[in-house]
Image 1 (cartoon, rainbow, N blue to C red):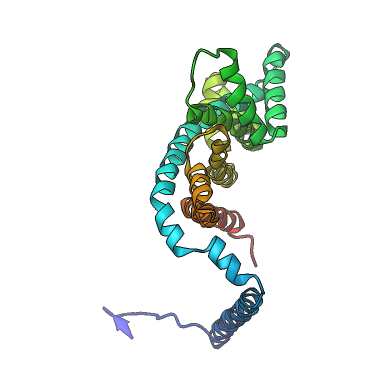
Image 2: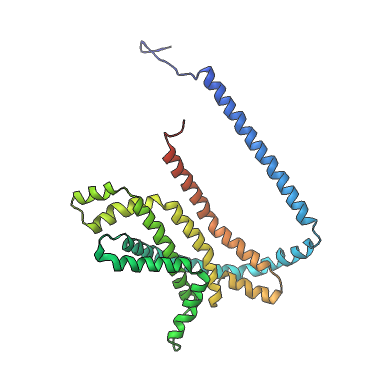
Amino acid sequence: MTTGGAPQITWQPSALEVDRRAHRRRTSGRSVLIALVSTVIFAVVVGTLVLSSPGWDSVRETFFNLEVAADSLPRILEGLWLNIRVLFFAAIGVAVLGTLLAVMRSLRGPVFFPVRALAAGYTDLFRGLPVLIVLYLVGFGIPALDPTQRYPAAVLGTIGITLCYAAYVAEVLRAGMDAVHPSQRIAARSLGLSHGETLRLVVIPQGLRKVVPALMNDFVSMQKDVGLISVLGAVDAIRAAQITQATTYNFTPYVVAGLLFVAMSFPMIRLTDHISARMARREQAGGTV
């Protein structure tokens, strides 16, 4: 075949490549079929065991009552809106405080030792303390300093969540900043950038990109832990479910609240998995045989 007198060569896969592609399709189809069959068998076995258990009728009535679920849903959704607002402000506080702590721990030179020691002590303390205990200390300790003042439970809960997760995020950011090759700092300083400009323009952006999946995982955990502010009396989704359970003597509202938290976290979980897989493919590009 020619085009304007010049021969046009049409690429065709070799017979060996055609066989390889057919083999990959057969292998992929067989894997999907095996996964589907094993999933169905597993679901049937688990479903049979649960449905044939002697207490299933009682469990279904106590935990999966559709009428109670429908009645409690509006109140739980109203409480979930409080959780979302707490999550929003806590995320901002964690981003600011976590970055500040990471920068403090990355400062070089003996003159900055007190600052590094302070940041290290903070992260060690709040990474070791359970979130629930921090909420108790903040929620009941701060109001005790001035009994004449009343502080909203949601505000105190936001402070407690921020203090805890800032320590986690600071360590993740510090690990990302330490992973930046020293030549990047040297190159930035040789171009005339100050230490602060090197951190802000070179180190932090590169370090942040390296730890994006870990930061997103921390955010998913924080989405879940904002439900703990109910221990301070805030009427969030968990507290609303507790109030409804106390009046109906049915645990279905807790299941509804749990499913709403899962629905709230699901997009971020899937996005985290997608970004992690994409970064893994990018790092392995050209390295597979």
